[in-house]
Amino acid sequence: MLKIWSMKKQQQEAAAAAPTKSKVQAAQLRVQHDLSRREKDDEDKKNKGMHLNIQFEYEDVENALHFDLVIEPDEGMYKGGSFRFQFDIPETFPFDPPKVKCKQKIYHPNIDIQGNVCLNILREEWKPVLDLNSVAFGLLHIFLEPNASDPLNKEAAEDLRLNREGFKRNIRSSMQGGLVRNEQYDRVLR
Image: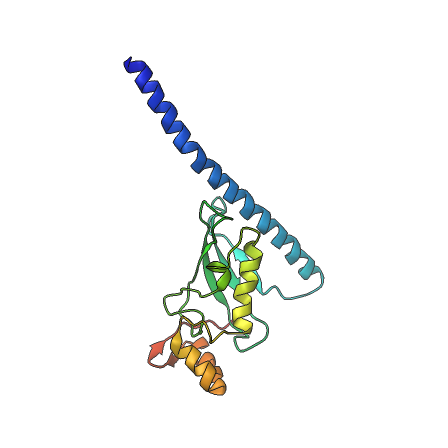
């Protein structure tokens, strides 16, 4: 009887472990698919002599669920900057969005000084049909068109709304590693 009880417990443990493993594998497969599409797009841009302003970088190539994304806008107010984001992909991806955090302290209405990012597709508008490229382009977009109506950094949003030229000066100063409103920012110029 004890042997049957032990076998039943082993089966239950194996069944409980199986869904987690398949979720991780599903998330990894989706990430690999998304990144292979991105690599193809990057290759096309290189062949056309275009600048790659979105780059995926891995510290550990064995761990496809954790990586950095570097955004280098080639136009707009943040032109000349290099911004690094940490991506942590949950096991439930693509049903849940990736966790994204800016690794530098930057002056931006949609990114707070702790690196939290306000991007609608990372919250309430996430859908499994969206991919990592959608997130990457969403991040690039907030550098091209900062959004003052849904801010995480309320002071930067206020500057953008009330004094656009002052906002641009603050961006330049902060990107050089300067002080803005008594807050020291990281140097992010290329």
